[in-house]
Image (cartoon, rainbow, N blue to C red):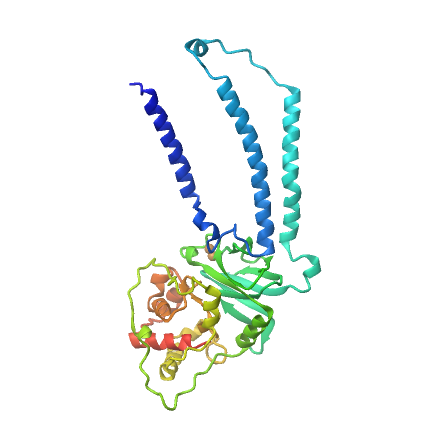
Length: 415
Ligand code: CUA
């Protein structure tokens, strides 16, 4: 049965709307997301800005081509459409076989468009490859290493006697307004280092020395992400970049190069009850987001607040947590400088873990509740992780609720 004309028209319009709508949806296109945490449109550093400019230049050139070709196509379709039954039945007109002027013209126009794109592309490749020669001396050096599934950051200019370079995990703190040259390494499989607002992604490849450079325009808190599929918990392999003004950055380095904080036993207020937040153990869904929203509104301020010692801490609980950290074999995979037995290097250095805003590959916010969730059942938070597979399972580690609370108190005290 033939459909009547109006319903065909409606159907066509409907299909068009559906196609456009689903394309926008599938590509994650949303005006709201333009300034999202990992937006490549809202850039905050010269490398990302250079890449964004190149992207838009390419967009404009291709848009012009699209409009020209589209208009010619629309004009021809309209002008030469069949207007009547006679037109439909008419013999096909004689076909032309090439017009040198048009062909040469089109080739010339294409070459011109390509040159317009190629020159800035080459300039951009050179610019983004490494810190510009004039500021290379001033570039700050760090090394980022990908692990399944977290990032380790090392500061080769900050050597600590008996330990090697200053080492952190999950959060890379850099000086703002200064180029940072990042050596990229991988300990296991291929990962990719990506801070969308600061620079494009570069792969971290085992046995290969890669690097990139970036710079933050101003102090800020930036979201990073592993951008190369690297196993079952790839999606939760994240990190943060915290850019600080030079003075604040120096203060941060000073504190970080110190050994872990020791909490003295109290004299007067011994036996204080654990804080309520430590006592609650909510059941989390396996894929529940680790973001509690606590660090979302003003993340840099939240990060700064995280550097301070919590006034309500319980030294007795902390001391018990420290004992457990050794007794439950945590020390074989984690380093805590100043705690002699804790020299493991398989997991993140935890010397100042309490001063970070994120945990577990930056998947969880560093709150007592989330830390407890992480050590309570690591496998539920980050499937396939080494802490579970190489630590908890072979060592038959079991933690009572009291153990968990004590470990959380100890780790959160490491500012
Ligand atoms: Cu590491 Cu994906």
